[in-house]
Image 1: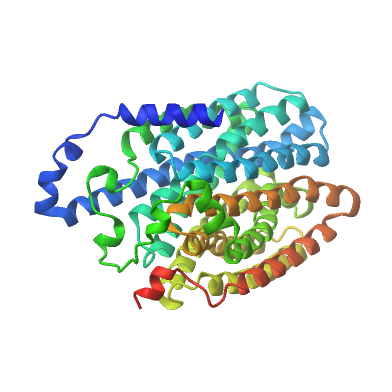
Image 2 (image 1 turned 180 degrees about the horizontal axis):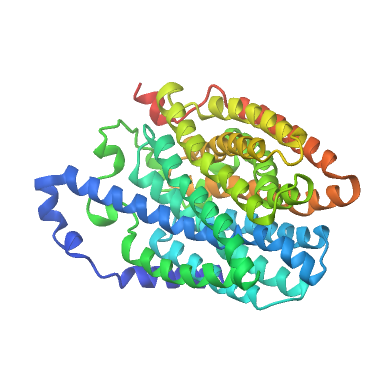
Length: 453
């Protein structure tokens, strides 16, 4: 199946119709190379951001629909949590496989294909009522969702250099918060007016159109357009590893990723990052409505404030890692994870009905969770080779969504049997362990930066 998909992707790539800018590229390049590069970098960035925000429209909607699915259809938190966990496991495995494919397949087609298929799975979700139906289609949705991240990792590493990668990755990453914020705010209104099924139908239709937008806007690498590499564009000294140029992707997988202890540290850190992140993302609307006195609409706004703050937290973390800590991503991530633990504790102990406090605490949690979540992918790309960026970031994603599986069914089980207090204590411990794994990379950064400083 994977080989068939790869063959279809390559077939589409060979049929690509060049735009006027691309057709005359060789002539324009000698006249205004910098301007052309700037044009394409801007176009790639905003297209990735819009496209990946679309992926989140098709992912975060389940959290908002879940309380209504539970009350209308009679499913427990454990049962709905099991849907999340099963899907998360397949997403994590899919992300690892997609990361490997993402280093070889044209990012333009891979990202658009994943989005349109995820949109169809959401439409199917809205049409069902059986728990088995939800498990099947949300799991298949997660498999297609896994095709979103790796092409973005490939595009970021080919269009932006290690000197700016933290900041640019954080800018792109804000698309996650934009998409989540839109769905958290809009779903409350959509569900109230039309029912929970339209929380799946509406973004499904929108994202079919967004997939066509991606096909029109995205292109794969600078070299595919006749431009120089990003390292040449930024005058970076790169020692050519001729042995890597002759390596197969299978060899690079083992040499640059699986035998790299720094990549494994980041993977383990991401496991705990996602336990914290997805516990808040998946369960905050339920927690705030059940224990803190918020209506579902208010809980949606409070959760959306978390996503808004995450935009600024991610941007600050990227900037600090680039400019202040000179590419040492682990230092920023360690500090942010410890502060995140403080924020989780504050939410746990906040008074019932303290709406303003809940907004402020959710802002703080969103601010600090975004930093490590952004820098995991950057660090994995730094520690692996550029050619293995998708594979490395895909592997960290696999561990991240194993953490999501814990946040789904695991938190549901803990809440059903031991209450919210035990759930929050467990999440705080996860934040501290995540900080410890990030600390193991404290003195490490991209080899390219070491050679150019």
